[in-house]
Image 1: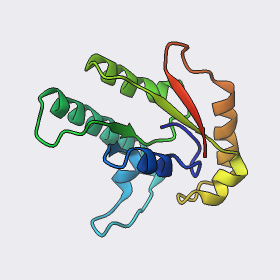
Image 2: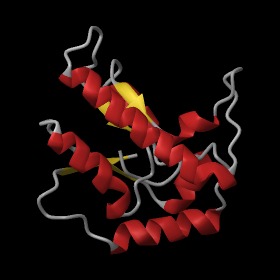
Image 3: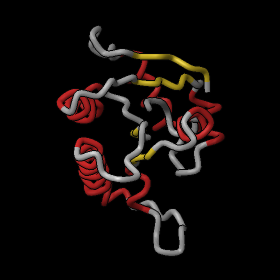
Length: 146
């Protein structure tokens, strides 16, 4: 998944792949009671945890482990290509098809829906980055409206 906070990435994933295994940096910030408590100082650790979890699920699929999912979704903003490439490369290394779903949404709408408290100015900067940077032409990208 790729898109602004509040664009509708999680909603799209749930509606289109309800049985998928979801890897997300946001999971790192959910406490034992299921409450989301974001801490920007831990964002690096959250993304490392997400990537480790993604690698672990790929290994379980490779090993034909019982209850392995058919679809794995990485549900992060993935604004820049370098944020996507570790996931893309791992999935390719394990022989999986990779489709990047880019959920398009204008910055103001995304800001009004985002549950993470990302300020409008930051969402607008993220939107500018999404618009400016093209992903590699050999990556499969589907654009959907959020």
